Image 1 (tube, rainbow, N blue to C red):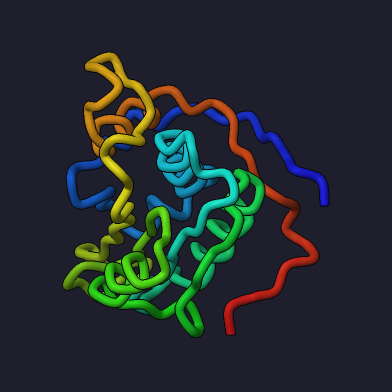
Image 2 (cartoon, helix red, strand yellow; image 1 turned 135 degrees about the vertical axis):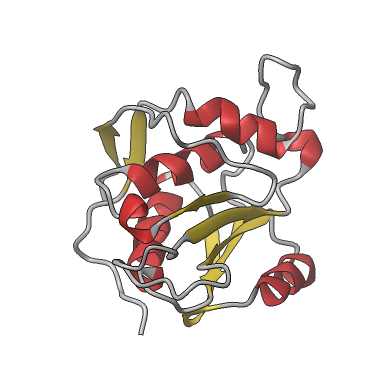
Length: 175
């Protein structure tokens, strides 16, 4: 299957903190918004080829769609294996446990925090949080090669201009 390179532009409001990127669901549904952030996470992990990624969420609104996007991007970016919770469901403690138990390289958790997660709710937000990205293995940033994963991801959110993914068709869906 051919890997696609899609031109994009950075989003100025993608400034993740130590617990990920928290935005309203409608923001994540903008064209390339989710993809840019996920690509920034992957760019911050230069030695990901062939490694295992753990992926899941709390099952709230947009969880399944986001997981499908992230799966295609993970395959296009060279991850060797992605462990996904049944139906895409994984709690934060479960993702952390699976990362350690399976020796995974890291994980991504999708959570709607304590909010309802509906698309039109004022308080709805989603958090996309990279987990257990090895500190020593983050990509170099202007502050040095060992600056840590959060800083490396912030560095890449301002610079990501190409998305790497696989075509939409021909992939299984979360059920």
